[in-house]
Amino acid sequence: MQGMNINDRKRGTRRGGRILIGAIVGIIAAGCGLAIGELAAAGTGPATSPVLSVGSAAIDLAPTPVKEFAIRTFGTADKLVLISGVLAALVILSAFGGVLARTRFGIGAVIFLVFGVLGVLAALTRASSELTDGIPSALAGLTALGVLYLLVRVWRRGEEPAPAATDAAPDPAPDADPASGTAAPVETDETSSVKPSRRGLLIASVASVAGAAVAATAGRLLQAVRQDVAESRAAIRLPTPADPAPELPAGYRTKVPGISPYFTPNKDFYRVDTVLSLPSIPAEEWTLRIGGDVTRPIELTYAELLDRGLTERDLTLSCVSNQVGGPYVGTARWLGVPLGDLLRDAGVSSSSDQLLSRSEDGMTIGTPMEAVLDSRDALLAVGMNGEPLPINHGFPARMIVPGFYGYTSATKWVVELTATRFDQVQAYWTQRDWDPRGVVKTASRVDVPRPFERVSQGEVTVAGVAWAQHRGISAVQVRMDGGPWQDAELSEQVSADTWRQWRTTFSARPGTRRFEVRAADGNGDLQTPNRTPPFPDGASGWHSVAVTVTP
Ligand SMILES: Nc1nc2c(c(=O)[nH]1)N[C@H]1C(S)=C(S)[C@@H](COP(=O)(O)O)O[C@H]1N2
Ligand SMILES: [Mo]
Image 1 (cartoon, rainbow, N blue to C red):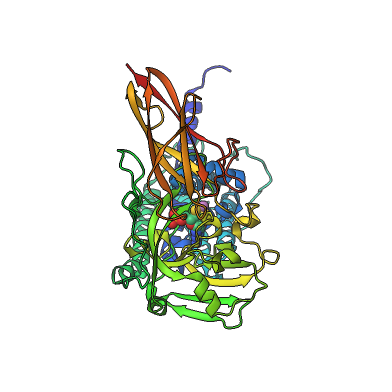
Image 2: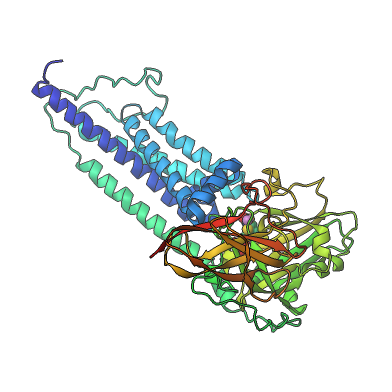
């Protein structure tokens, strides 16, 4: 290849310019679509916006290993990563669509059409979806197509050599030759000396972007107005418990800098769920329906729930997705109504072995019925650490059943309880092959020192927490560098349903030191050293932390 001549070079730059403009046009069209989707979602609910619909569908469809990887890698930022991913894919593909649309409008348009259809399908296949939930994505797709058509038309006008020339605007109807491959068609104005005018395109683009900004802002504002749930929550005065939490023993907590506090403040309490937009249910509008295999179905309002007299309990909640030593565990003072009483009032049949709970967002969770009906403190909770439930922890009401991981017991935003059988209905996570019962495994974690912390030689304090809800913790042992196990000092047990803090000290010489912890539950059963991943019924193995001891 010899060097390019001037004309080739000009052509090259103009080609590059076209690709860039095409990409921008495509992205603007997609942005306008999303903005209209956002506006429409003010009517149908934030969760039905196109991006959140697609994101939620991705969560539901993601194979279990992918979900596990996401939780392990991104932790609570997993949702942000997901949304960014959906947006990035959208930007790239719509840029591509915009480039194609200039010469082959039909092909470019198909990309946007597919987006719209995917969005509608995603919205309509959600567990709790209604037909109208598809509207925002449908409008988004149509808007994107319309804006694309308009911008491409204006753009091509601007490139016509003379205003009097035959109308070269693209025809959105059947493509001239969709099958002719990717080679750029001969362009009539390619060699023309007339400089294309892009003023029209610039004006149309700016107008579109401005329109989109207005629509998106209005959509967001309207969505916020609709969400009067924060106001509803702020107005609630929870009654003092009819059955208060048992008094805390004097030594219930261990104070070591850096140890998990006995009570986890609400703002620090881990959050795990599949929702991309928080369900917003004002307490005044909430009801709980209890049905299925019962003789007297019940529908209960929030006010009726509070009138029943509330039970207060300290309970530890943990997530099956924790790796050994993982962060998804906390202890709170919960206020609620015993679930067993509600079910007995409804006349639950002795043939049902599963309590299937359903949340506003369509999540289903199956809990062993016997655990709900036995003497343990299974609660339908409305309060957490002295406040109404925070919205992200299930406001107005959620379940909590000591002894089980959250995925089989702790339904947030719960609206329906159904007495049924495990062999008849499978809940969300069970359909994804997680263990149907989800009994918590005994676990212990080193909080102090932190991994790879540098500590001075001599007395080193090692401290943390251990939990085995409903069996309790009877002992915690720690060892250094695989040496002899030594018993840690335990905080006094509040109940078998809560964790215990522990501490001990080692005299450590300089170098890399590894501290390892194991606990025994209330039955005296020691944690197994065998490492297993969270799937399908919870991680097992001993947690250890390596640190540098400095001279
Ligand atoms: N509606 C709903 N409830 C849910 C979930 C969910 O995804 N949706 N996740 C469950 C899981 S896996 C856990 S561990 C707990 C976590 O409760 P938290 O977020 O209040 O800590 O909620 C449970 N309840
Ligand atoms: Mo969980």
